[in-house]
Length: 439
Image (cartoon, rainbow, N blue to C red; front, top):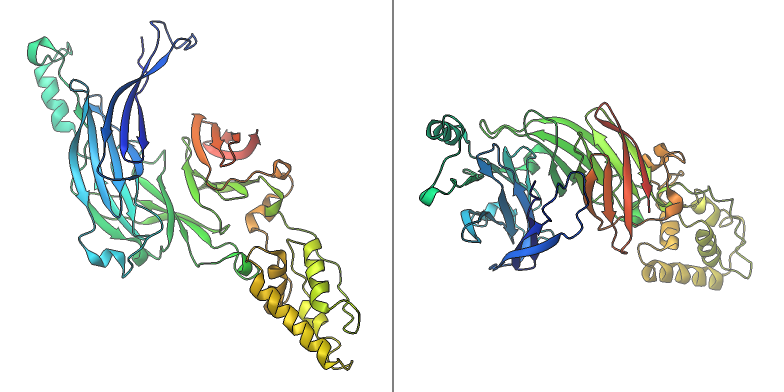
């Protein structure tokens, strides 16, 4: 009977180890009816866990290790002792001693994040926005040679009292820190290791220039990707490929088992690899809206120009009228405007600017005074995907989504609304050509 992998659960400052118990049947061709989850241990931790990662064993003589991170920049490497039913700490890494790593800052909204290479060759820790700690995995050639000499016929090495010898846990060596800002990579949002590379390749999601919704007319696609080839022996990390002009709300990377990675934004699912990209729109807010009709303003009418502009912006919430400035001032020299009307108009405009939030359609409308000529605020990748690459009618919100791979071409997304979405990937020659979602 094959054994299912153990399950590790982190609940704030408690680490729980579980094992899946299955009936004595062949699970390859039968259902798992009667299976149960058995808790092996519950270990209290001396801090809140920010992220968790698994360092894979590089050979049959190694078992996996567990990496836990804690604020502001601490890393613990743990391994499981099956005989004692407890965990052991194989190494501790502390990066808070060097004040220069913080670059003068004292508060960081994002905690440290640990990621590992799929083949177990190294691990990485992202901290302080731009600092990257790299931890090479320990080599196992010497250990494998010792095991072969002790057991040349492959009959199994016995330990004390005739018990099989224990596997050695994967572990990491001496770490070193790389400042990504010196490579032109600032404000890092997420990192992942990619599959199907001879050397470890780290994909970095970062923001080139900060922006916010009120500035989408000027600066909308501010996120970028950078793929770094990691050579922990010579400590070299060249950039092998990159991608630019991702939507500014892109927040998460998901490595694809066949190569490349998915990038999630609030309104889109995007795929990137060294050879190309594709995208899927999951709600209407990412698509360009209709060009507003011409707006005629009568400064002597009963409705003030500011009120008329606000109503027009409500009709076209995703667009800014390209001729606002011209229309607002077109009668300034030709028509004698009463002082009280002008004063009331300017007071109304000032109230709108102060009272409206950055996401209000009228706030987008007001920014048109400094955005002439017309410029569409929809993400460039959404415009390129068009209707054919759209599932906009589903109106999904992917912000803060979590994921789990069901197969190499099937990804399960759990949204913050509680909704579960299944993403199907059409893969050709190792690249994702098409993405479809079902709810």
